[in-house]
Amino acid sequence: MSKERIRHDRSAGGIEKALENLAANKPELENVVKAFGPLLLAKAAFKEECPLPESVKEESFDFDSAGFAQGEPLFASIGMIDFQDDFEGVIPRLLPPMKTAFVGIREDLEKMEKGFSDHVIDTRECVRAFMNDQQEILEKQAGQMGASIQVFQFVLGQLVKPFMEMQAEVFAPLTEGQQWLHGYCPVCGSHAAVAGLAGEGGKRWLQCANCSHEWRFNRHTCPRCSDNDHTKHEYFFDRNSPVKAGERVDVCKECRSYLLTIDLRERIDPVNMDVAAMGMIPLDMLAQQKGYAPLASTPWNALK
Image (tube, rainbow, N blue to C red; front, side, top):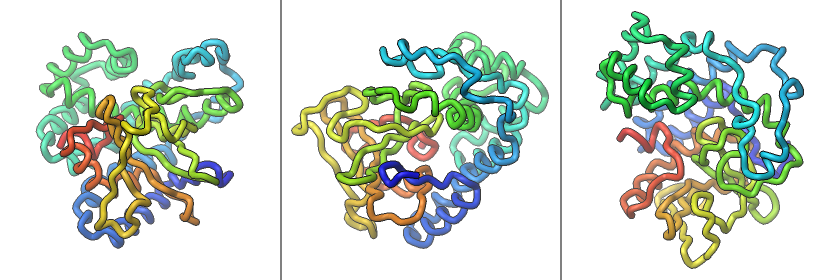
């Protein structure tokens, strides 16, 4: 991969190594690693063991280049392939580590785990309702599960994420060579969870919170509100961090949002951006204490 882009390692082995390094370099985050590490590993292992069929190829889908040029994300035009039959397979893989990660909502998670096991709801209808944002159906199903609608939707987002990532990997090549100047993901339309600076001059790459696709975006423009007045932008870093300003949080005073940012120009090895972002929780907390909201929710900045 070009040095102009983020060099990723999204494999289960790479994540495990990154978690070990994070715990060693930042021992104060050992509990965070123990809480959220198993969830990241379970997701990666599921993707490796249950990949999309080889028959799924980007050239078999029609790409609406005109709609894309007008700001329409890729999935809005080609849709997502049907993964509903495989959805039940991800539930027993991700719900157990989620109970470890999210102690505060463990009761709701246990209700959902039992509800899925007892087939209290139609999972195919559940996935369709979630992907189409059909709130009335989701609220009914959350009630049938005995869980709050907020927790229900959050958990569904985590369960759907591996499928979004796998499909983004297949279809993202359709966007190559196409101009995209927006702060939301060109593949699925979501906002970024973390940014990386790479290449000469520190070009900014945003990584989507939902499908993990990355795209170039102007370094001096807010991805949420598109404000480019540098007087309204600041960044903070953790002075106790071993990498200092190599890990920082960029904030926009105009829309009061923030984005974690990692300077990758001095890094030789590939990086797992999820683990790297998880290691920046102190910056999440600092930004939120100052009244800023994350550009996108992640397991470690939501449901505290």
